[in-house]
Amino acid sequence: MKIGAVFTGGTIGSTIGSDGFILVDTSEKYVLLEKYYEKYDKARETEFVIKSPYTILSENLCFDNIITLKKTIDAVKDEVDAVVVMHGTDTLQYTAGFLHFMLVTDIPIVLVSSAYVLDDVRANGLANLALAIEFSKLKKAGVFVSYVNSDGEQYIHAADKLMAHSSFSSDVYSIDAKYYARLKDGSLELNESCVYEKNTVPADNIPKKILFIHAYPGMDVVGVAEDTDAILIESYHSGTAPVTNALIELSQKAKQRNIPIYLVGINSAVSQYDSVKDYDILGIKLLYDEAPIAAYCRLSCAR
Image (cartoon, rainbow, N blue to C red; front, top):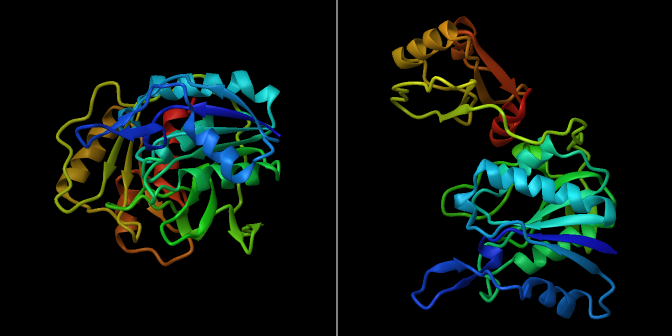
């Protein structure tokens, strides 16, 4: 099997420095692949086509990096059976979401990360890579994330279903438990409740500027930049956000400037709260059953 291996930095490509801080390793050793051969493929039947478009800690991710990564994958995907992207955990869901809405692919594109540096006994980077390669054998086209959680459960997630990390946890989950596949009794089992549709419209840039707000008590937005294209509010878990004078003022200003406001995090399968009526009055559009990060990526890429 021929795999495109794209290295971008992150914890999976980092070491502990002499001062005790984690820093990205810019060497060309690609220790992860050697560890994979040693544990999972002693016969070296897997051929890796290595690319390294940039090396950063993923908290420093910017749109230019995503566009560069997309072009790197486009350049290699026609000569391999699958592409695995080594990435940091902090912005894993964002890169997955952007690639989902930007790439058109007939092969699996799987993002792989690690909760700890590879030399740490708690690291799951090698297991995540092995799971990604095993999943790639199913030849499912699209963008996915491979991740082994701290409880040992091994999942493949569709890029448009990913939830944000909880604070102080690197575990990865999909909205409404709609993971794409799970390793069970040594075999990958597809999840029938997860409907994933791969993207069909390529995008070479991220043209829209989205103001992304998270709901919180006393939520206020002092001003909106002149070049804002849309406002996205992530609700509380029940699909609600505070209807305050600040929100009313924001909606009025947005309407005057023809800036749409969206509320994401609302579930169509449960009863809605009375505040939903207020959102309709304020002209706030409800994005039902959509992962917040994926909604942000989709709106950013919208034409």
